[in-house]
Image (tube, rainbow, N blue to C red):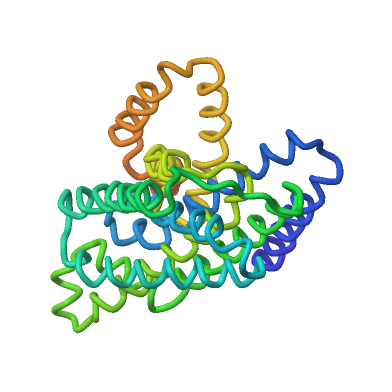
Length: 318
């Protein structure tokens, strides 16, 4: 009964969001587009990094790959086929990166993924300058921002559905075991390498598609735009704030932080990155398990206290 109600409520929310462009102007649609994009990025990031606790900063690498694939191939291939090619490129890169780096852990994995994003940006920049003779590309499409928004909204729904199915499957349990103690998981016979690689690849493909779908937002695409490291840090902070290990955690973190960052970037453009760093530090120290983890912990503690108080009152009454 509760599951059916939740599904109905969720369907109603997505239906309302899908109808929003008919009532909002261009600015409102663009604003929702950015919001849904970050919700999808944070949810895709948490699909792998949340339960395994492998902190990846390669988000912008795959985002940029998707955007540049569209910029290069849009005029030669149908739009749907360009998205397929972008997803395949993202999958190949994710498999190569995963096979070579997922044995790393802790700060080493973080450093490598951050370096990967910078490496890909430099390769794309070198190619554009030395091979094509320009630093960027113009991208003109024959549809408006509402089409981009609907594609992103559909991808967001698919991402949440994948997260729900993974958490209710053996894969979800395997990922939790890896996050708790990977050595113990291996000794229990769990194929940790295959599990990590599969979920990392799935997460990376979704992130690549977000970049590919959002590419038409920019008429002119260059490395500094689509390989902006701020995308990786914003995605990370949003997921951590809500609770990366929970299905709805990235959504809870992405919505308020996106609103806050939009206001900060408009009112404090010179101090935006400083505030971003301070906020990240505050989240790590104050809410290490995210908002949902904090609420769940205190709710469990409150119920335990009420139960103990009730038992005590029964004993005194008896």
